[in-house]
Length: 189
Image (cartoon, rainbow, N blue to C red):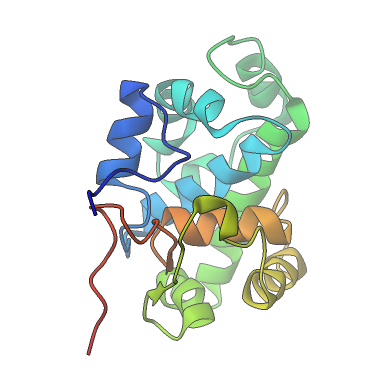
């Protein structure tokens, strides 16, 4: 049997790079986890490739800055950013990035380690799933539903259970690479 990339990965170089170097790889970097949680929320109603193609603009406007700085953005700042065609020009989604930064910062002020808090949903260990075809992977799980409710309770926006599951896949909390994909993690014994 020959190894091939997951069926969802097109031949677009941006997609291939994301698939091969980021998606499904366990991340314990706070800034990256925050970015991916927000970017998954930006995707709502759109294709992931749309978000990936606009990622550099998101870096420029948001994610190259500390989370505490993002939390200080005013509605006027966000309205101005909404004029940039490099972003998804949906004011509610852009406000969600700021609101999520506020929520993240508030939790940190309560001495919560956000990396550990998020990874607690999978007991600090990536879950390796049996995925024959990418269509077989779930859109959401009991865990992503619980994560969604917990995030919303803490003030996060655009974090429904499907978004949370996509986030979990993106940051390697779950490995949903197809079984024949060369990026699939080997099973632990």
